[in-house]
Image (cartoon, rainbow, N blue to C red; front, side):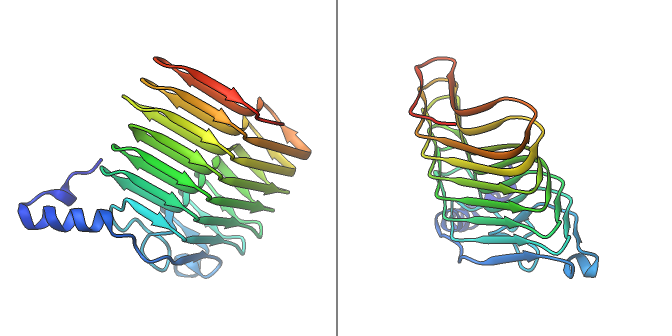
Amino acid sequence: MKQGFFGGGVIPMILGLCLAFTPALAQTISIDSTSGGGTGTVNHDVWGNGTLPDGAFSGYEATVNGNDVNVSGSATVNGSVYGGHAWTGFPATVDNNAVDISGASTVNGGVHGGFANTSSGGTVTNNTVAISNSTVGNTVSGGTAAAVGAATADGNTVTINDSSVDSARGGYAGSSVSGNAAAENNSITVTDSTIDFNVDGGIAAATDGDATANNNIVAITGGTVNSVVSGGMAGTINGDATATDNAV
């Protein structure tokens, strides 16, 4: 994590604390043939809570909700796309963000409806990704919580139709150092598409805590998956791991 944002004395530190706990206003980022100076190409990650007009990284936030990213019109993103992205040393909440990729567009990184990258516990809930007639070069995830401490991914959804993607998962909860990880009630629907690697409804991974993957769903109609398909997976080094009521 970059530290400069909080450096420089008492006033910058207070400002950093205020910004970290104050949710930014929800907004919509649109990437299309007019983006990138009319080239239709954006050469950086796109965050729904980033800087207008093209979603460049704008700073650290702990609460991110209600943002939308739309990529269409054969646009290309040479990076990853996040409906909402929290990057913070504070507890993070990322919910109700959405990504829509359509119209023969290409994302050469990953696509995440919601993403929490935090050193104090993170929760991602009710984020969505919809991909149609497009290509994604890395992992597609409805919601990803990568946390030091507890991590939760709950109620996130992915829909992939007539597209080609690297791998896909409804929700991922990863807890490192200490804390429980829970991936619950996530879903992924794949129709007439090609998935190069795994398709997982929900994944929970912990280091020093329990991991649970419950009530996650994968539905596949047509197309090809070139690796493993699982409703839910849970694993931990020091703790208990359970995966129940998941379905394919």
